[in-house]
Amino acid sequence: MAYSNRGGLSFFLVKALSTRTLVLFEGSEGPNLLSGGLSEAQGSRFENPAALFEALRPRLLDHYAKVCGSAASPL
Image (tube, rainbow, N blue to C red):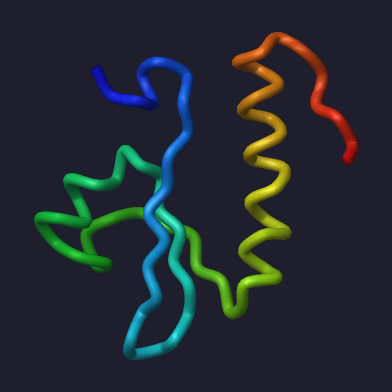
């Protein structure tokens, strides 16, 4: 059983060589990345690590609030 099917959250982080942007893919996009690379998979693009972490934090908090059954902490 896949990690995501058991409530986990996984990602692939790729640095596009042509544009030097960071591309974040949900773990479920692994087969698409394998078969067709960046052009086949759906991902979010970021110009720098700060933008990546700014976008990733609320996704992580929301996901684990749902899994754990509690409200997300505003750390």
